[in-house]
Image 1 (cartoon, one colour):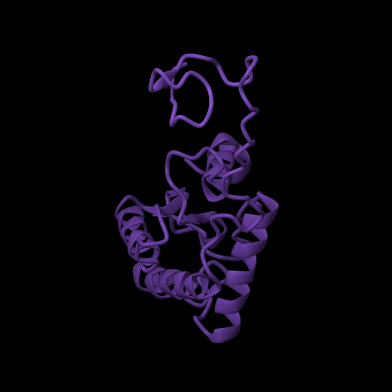
Image 2 (cartoon, helix red, strand yellow):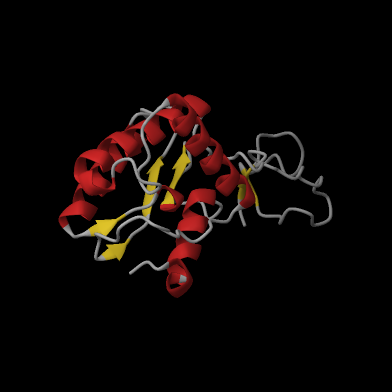
Length: 184
């Protein structure tokens, strides 16, 4: 590896220092940690989750009127929206989703689906998750696919090039275990 030598040691006759880091004469380089990652890395902010839950309920009730007011698409009141945001946070932090069991809800869909939403950086519009969800739900309805809230996953301000996208990891797990989760 060839590195730039700014004259602070090494051979000052050349702007390049052909020594490998850690070879004799080189000072050890400090380890770069980058951004510290926690269980909340990539989680949408609380208000964003409340907005996402409201968007989900409002649009699913419009798209699936026969499910409005059932456990699959409950009434969009403040308590339900807060409980849905809590559920999203739990799934995100624990890195797991539970299979959707419709119970007494009439099965009016052909298949179940997963929605994965993401925006790349902190300069992006956080409302873009809502818009993405709306697009996914509209397309899913056209295809007869119902997306339960349990299967709505997202990453906020996380590059798609990172492997540590927590929402993506959960979505991938659901798809890999499609028999258990009932998704197509």
